[in-house]
Image (tube, rainbow, N blue to C red; front, side):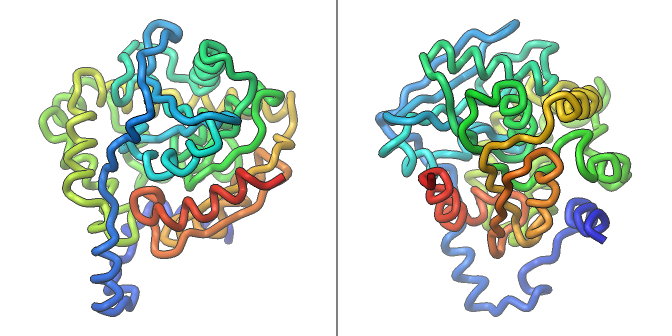
Length: 321
């Protein structure tokens, strides 16, 4: 039953607010609070940091114990300002754009998540940071797990949001479902078809994987469409990040067999219109000390749909002993 519920949450068209019985007043209130791309706090700096075969665009701010925020597909590091603005008060916050995404460079290879984790270790070394907590979403979960399992002494805690790990848990059932078409949507002809239509492609994900699509506003959609229209961006997302999933599955199974489950505290957060309360069980295949949280009136895009709720569960977890 668990596996079917997880697969269904990711592959069906999610219900709209009115279909779920939300009143007009509640719907309007939800719309009035919808997310937009927030500006970065003035005290954050950014730089292109050298990694294998290229650079990653990294934002740094705050002071104190380090926290790394990792985004996924459909976003860039620009999803994190609301949380970063809170965390910077007593943490050093590091926010990269993942390899080949956002303002990072566009190398042809190196998209295996274990390799990206090694690049993250190099970034932390460059910043003089010994260890860090991780807050991750979507593909960021995959890079975060690869970092935590390869560098357990450098990982203090992990917050994972609403995406499974290749090769672990019910990944194979999800990956083979033809409705999850985007995992194998790649190749030169695909890239030519998408060129100039990046907004259409991203809208499909924002609309299908959200609880109320209007919470992801026009400014946000246009912002990310422009970033994914940059030369090489779609190629690296589809033919890089997604294409590496098969090798990521092999790598994760090997790492789990060799190193066992993560022992660090993990908070697994699911949107109630997506993985919901099933998500801690999915992450539990990779970690032994997992607690869960469910974000209400949210699909997959938790930081866009319900940032206040997300911050309210993430910050206490990171501050707890």
